[in-house]
Amino acid sequence: MFGVLLLHSLFSTDLEMREFAEYLESQGLRTSTPLLPGHGTDPSDLENYTYQNWIDAADSALKKLNSECQVTFVVGQVTSAALALSIASSHPELLGIVILSGILTLTRKQNIIKHALRFFPNILPWASEKSELNYSENTLTLMKSVKTYSKVPKKSIIEADYLLTSTRKKLKQINQPVYIMYSSLSKNVDQRNFQILLNEVNSPKKKILSIGRGEGLMTLDEGRYIVFREAASFFWSCIDLYQM
Image 1 (tube, rainbow, N blue to C red):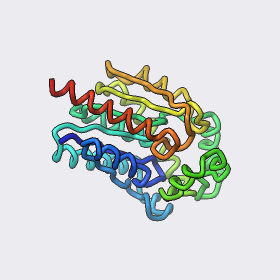
Image 2 (image 1 turned 90 degrees about the vertical axis):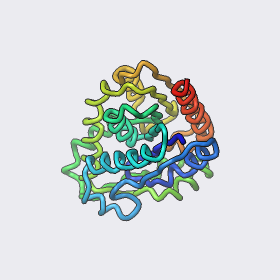
Image 3 (image 1 turned 135 degrees about the vertical axis):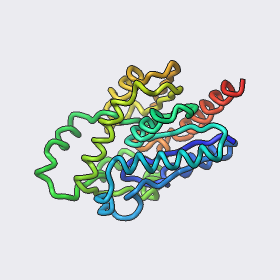
Image 4 (image 1 turned 120 degrees about the vertical axis):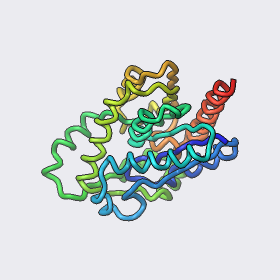
């Protein structure tokens, strides 16, 4: 049996990976979609957790999947790309990594907000309603079903930034094949992130694909079926090489 750990983005829920998991299961792959600590309940619960708690939760889920499967992969989306890369750096047995619109560095606007956090109230808006105007009706329906937090504590934004910074230092330790997919239309992810991954991850096998559709979470957006097919093909190509 071959397994895939699917990590949802920060301040979202495991539901963003539901359709992706169903597709991979239909292709003969076992999946695990853990809910990260402090997520899926109330934003105030995030106050009780640090970025290390999120890493530990992802690590525990991977260890459980490893106990059930011959080989495993990990997928990270947007902020959870840092989680996927972080645990990959300490789990060389992973056969491959898929990164979907992964964030390792903030945009200029995001950095300005981060440095000005002390001037804001404790709970800050996270999901922008204005950005929803750029999504299709079908995508909006899917995104609303995921129950992403619309507001999060300042502490959680700081912890998310700690996660990105700590992961960046671990990239040279990653030797597994990496497949990076991103939407060229996204305005919320700095395009420099993908070049950082290509340049700093130590894997001899790196692949990148720009999907010119959608600008939300890739597992929910218009181009999601391309993502599903590409990821499954990547997993099976790695498995074929492993079995040779």
